[in-house]
Structures are given as C-alpha cells and as structure tokens.
Amino acid sequence: MIMTSKYLFPVAILLTLLGASCTKGALDKKPDATIAIPSTIDDYQQLLDGLDGGGYSNIPCLFSYRSMGDYLADELNAGDNIYTTYFESYPFITDLLTWNKDMFNTFTTGTPVNEWNTQYQTVLTTNLSLEGLAAIPVTPGNQVAWSTADGTALFVRALMFYNVAQFWAKPYNATTAATDPGIVLRLHSAINDVSVRSTVQQTYDQIIGDLQSAVRLLPNTSSQNTQLSKVRPSQAAAYAMLAKTYMTIGDSINMTLYADSALQLYSTLMDYNTLTGFVNFNPETVYSTVDLSGTVGSFYGPWRIDSGLVSLYDSNDLRKTLFYTNTSYVDGWAFLGDYSQNYIFTGMAVDELYLMRAEGNARQGNTNVAMNDLNTLLTARYKTGTFVQRTAVNATDALTQILTERRKELVHRGCRWTDLRRLNMDPRFATTLTRTLLGMTYTLPPNDSRYTLQIPNYIITASNGSITQNP
Image (tube, rainbow, N blue to C red; front, side):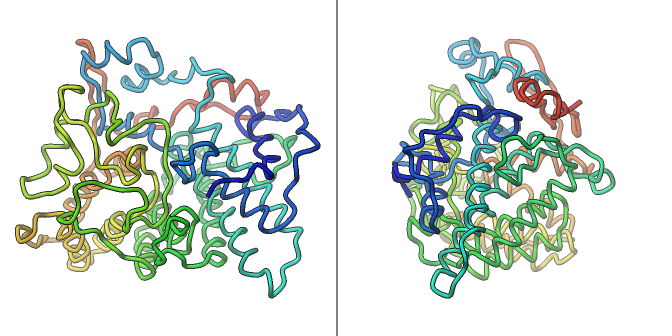
C-alpha cells in the first residue's frame, strides 16, 4: 500500500492544513498545477491506500492515533528516575502523566497534535475521494472497484471520527447525548465551510451511518489473510468497528450483533503456545492500523507497564511472557506484545471481537454463551493442558471476568481510555486513577471533566471562534 508520487495532489493539500479541514481559510496556498489530479476509480483507491504514511514503507498501515489514551489511563507510567532522565524537559509528557487540563497549551501550528491534525487530514482525503467517486458513473464493469473505494473512504472517515471522539467528545450518556458537545464533523472537502461542533449523539450517528454504508460496499476479503487484506478495510472490519462503536455508547444488543457478524466472516485465533513473539499482519488481525506516537517491541522506550496490571496474570498465562519483559531500563515491566511489532497496534483483531461478543451477551443475561466465548479465547492463551474452563454464578460475575480479561488482553492498543470513560458510568466498575511523581500524588476520579480533553488552543484560535472549547 505505497502511494505513487503521481497522486500527491490531495496530500499536498493535507500538508498545508492547520487542524486539517477544521479551520476556515486554512488552504491559502494553491497546489502545484503540474501535479496530477485523481480522476479515475483507481486513482482514488491509490489515494486512499496512500494513507499508509508515505515514506514509512515498513509500516504499510493507516495511521490511527488513539494511543494517547494509553498514557492517560492506568496501563503505563514512568518512575521518578525515568521521568527525570527522559521526560522532565517535555512539558506535554508531564501534563499527560498528571492529567493537566491545559496539556495542549504548549502545542503550536508547527508542532501539531497528531490525534487531531493528522486524523482530520485523513478525513479531508476521504471527503475528496467520496466527492470524486460520486462524479464517476457506476457501470457493471467498475461496480466492484467503485464500491471498494467508496466503502474504504466511508470506513476510514468513520474510524477517524471515532478516534477524535474518544478525546474531545464527552463520554456517551444516553440522557444528555443530544446536547453534550461532540466533535467537528467535516463531511465535505470545501475548506471555506465554517467548522462547528456537533453533539455527541450526532457524532456517533455519523460514525454508525458511515460504517453501515461501508458494510454494504466493502468486500469480504479478511479470510484471504494477505497483507493487502489486512490494510484495506473489509466487510468484517466494518462489522468490527460497528461493534466497537456500539460498545462505546452502551448498546449491548448491537455490540453483540455486529461482533457476531464479524466473527461469522473471520474468527481465526492464534494459539499462543505456538508463538515466540508477534509479527505484523498476524492471522488474528482483521484490520491493521498503527499509531506512531509511541513505540513498543524492541523499541519500547522508557515507559513502564503498571505493576498492578502485570500481577493480574497467573503463571500459566502465556500473555505474561509474550507481552512483557522485566528490565532495569524502565525499572520494571516493559511491553513487548504488540500486534504490529515495533509500533502501537490500534487496529481490529479477533480477540477483541470475542471479548465484545462475550461482554454483550453478559450484559443481556446470556451467562453461558458469554462464558463460552471467554473460554474459547483463554484456551488459546494458556499453556497447553493448564487452562481450567471458567464458570460464572450469574451475569454480573461473567461481566466482571470478561472486563478483567479485556484489560489483560488489549494492552496498549488504544482501548483502555475508552473503557475507563464508558465503565466509569457504572459504579460497579468505576476506577479512580492515581499516580505519584517526584513525591506528588495526582488523581483522576471517575467521570472527571478531564476525561474530555481541552481542544488545542491553536485550533480554537485558527477557527476564529467557530469551534467552542470544552469546559
């Protein structure tokens, strides 16, 4: 999925944007007239394939930025020695570690926030593609290619909106979603459109609508188990994102339905007994995306995994040895178990589908069905012959076990921050986060307003006041 230089026109636009297409008048510089403009279905498919990050040819995946939540949540931390050696001179890292509400004050147009800028730049590319494809007549001869490109653009736009919403939209609450502030929904490439925020309900309605349209357009290529099938969205990937979106807004019925739909198309689980480590595009991957905001694997950096998380694994659980290494470099446990090897995997995989279907069934009172899915997953995670099938006395017990395993399975995949936001609304699963740094203790209570981040000031300024700030 490497974009050829012939189709750099929209990318040239993207690189000139401030806050992507979310600022009025951001595109004053015209692109070079000699650069070819996409006009065919193949042009637009290549343009969408080119969202792999260009020069990062060893990471042919869409950049999907969600890992900032991992640093805000309770998976990663930094000891005093690591902090003073590596992070103390970087105000943003300090702000992340201490949940400072003003963490983006130090960012400028020259040092943009990837979670905002890059993802809205990607939204612009999807809108350019959707508009270009709409102008191409659909014929029996080009139907499949047109549908694949159009479905890809819709899927990717939904994914970007979802990622942005996890930081800058309020957590979904059914009673207030119609008035709570959501995100900016850019649905056209016209740069002069004024950017305004939607409501939370409008945000998720748009994400779901795009994904439902994508399901009808995308092919089911996930079972081909090739690199191309992992980096282009498939019907299974769209079902998976629908399940994830419904999970995020607390709709257990649709979460179960769409997780099941995805698993009906692709359900390959890796037996961890056969592994010595992880590779890119492994058989469990439904759709591969990466986040370049941090690194893992042999380049795990100075971040340390929370010791309380590591203590949840028993001695026969293979995830403990495949996911972590105890090293003096971080004064504790470092994370190795990423599905994209050296960068943060933020895609969709079969293990998460099993966990979502299990959670959905538990929430609906289908205890035995839920535990069957959990046992299917865990059998592939424990040393051969050591796993004892789990049972649950009731649906609440099943849900508690499933959520614990979700935390243990989906480490450093950009999932935990969203889980904290949604689970904090249930007193049974609310979590108070605490960190101690250089003798100072910092706390993030459940449902604190800081679970909705402040929009970077340079975005607010560039919008000329049309984008309102979070409280």
